[in-house]
Length: 418
Image: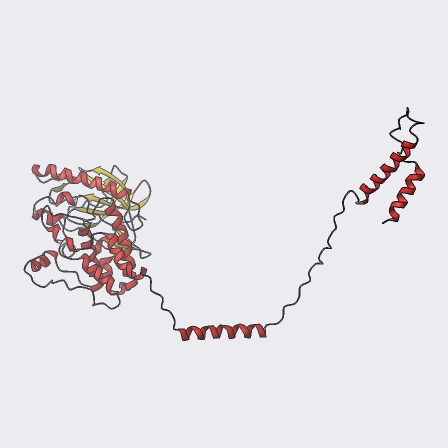
């Protein structure tokens, strides 16, 4: 699911704002600006109309206000010395937009098109009807249950894990950049594209473009600060710290100053303060918000493992006492006997009669060999006595070798012995 925008927030263009006026056409007449939605130090987000597809969309304009200014529709650099830096930011904006467009995740905003116009770059995203976590925090009637908060965090962690696997950082995680759609599912929006390039400038410039007090880690506050996945996780922890406690955490620079002076951390841990949440869940948020990067949770996957480990842990089986086992066996035997005694005998089913055994009959009776042998001997004796008379004649094949009377007497004699 792709998404982006805060349609419930009525954002009005301030006097002197650099936003494009309502009704402005982009990319010829394909898109028409309807109104601005938000205006930050790095870019301006608009509600727009896709005239070709006939649908509402969100368009984000690359507009690093420290380096550029508006002249009609066009965006111009403030001075020639900023020209190279401004162009590098625009190119990184487009490069990261392409990278985000390749990621497919139900909890990450989808980028559907990027283009250049008015001497700057734009990305087109889907419009999502919902509210952001900042509005949820402000309105008591929208308070979330502990189970809902945990489900939202797990989904966002899975989305952030995919972002980091693609060697990207969000750099602007905060309550107003996590939307809840009409089904209550979170969507991570407004990636801080090209903020890494901007953060290489002076401290004053990088603080305007990159940081968001209460949510940005201390490494975002100085030029050239080393940013890593733990930087995003700090901001995510600060976001859920605000969601659970109702108060935004202290500025990370203030915390760093107190830490350097060996003073207590002004950020009070969540663990132990909210009984509706597991201690493991709250302790993981506290760990993600450690001041020093090396002391934080280092990956979104590690964070998910920490908060899921308690549920996934296999509980050991407790063996029953021998006395309890004996009682169980006695009860089972008693119930079985009672069932057998009280059960009605089953009616015998009519079974088909068993087939009688069939004796195999040989195709040649047992007496046939003996009979043939005896008749052959009789024929031999009879023919030998007449050999002299019929020595020159040969018996015809169709004539019996034994005369009929003798053959009958032989058959009767043989049957008489049976």
